[in-house]
Amino acid sequence: QVQLVESGGGLVQAGGSLSLSCAASGRTFSSYGMGWLRQAPGKDRAIVAAINWDGRNPYYAVSIKGRFTISRDNARNTMSLQMNSLKPEDTAVYYCAASPNSGWVSSPEGYNYWGQGTQVTVSS
Image 1: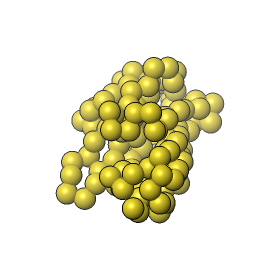
Image 2: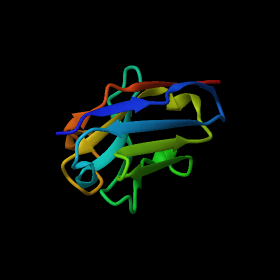
Image 3: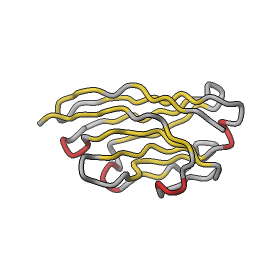
Image 4: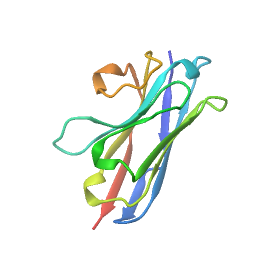
């Protein structure tokens, strides 16, 4: 089992940047596929980016590709999401999630463990 805690959300103007972090507990972090997902008001939770156990070949949603970068540090049990060129439509609660599948998982249903979420608000 793994416990996840996100940090780094906040309010930013359009065009700005934010960096989210996810700290994981447990000694088997490196065996989990990890992801960032978001949920905007009135919308379903959706994948933003996903990364497999060794950090290679991450997956990005089309809407954020080229603007966001996902990374992980297995030695520190952490995962990050660097968000650049933010748009108002990026406003959502962002969740860190872990899957027992060591590859990247592009569907919310594939994740078993979730953080509490962190709010990202992008003003126009």
